Image (cartoon, one colour):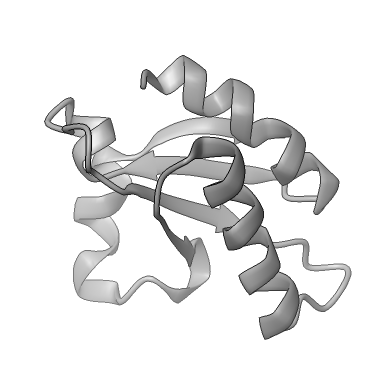
Length: 97
């Protein structure tokens, strides 16, 4: 699966949930993925409305369904400060409205 394929399949789910920013990091961003790799994705949730745990899990499950892979979903604001620079440097954005 290429980054373009991930983008094509994930964008409808991300837009449905009003996500303005999403990026891929980890093995897909580095080009070291294999057939069993998961997709590491960070999103910026809309500030204007509360997204609870159930909706967050729903987004993750919808992404897993369309990508046919396990998705590790995180939020940009929740990245630990020690990891923020490293992850930010390798993140490839698939959505940045």
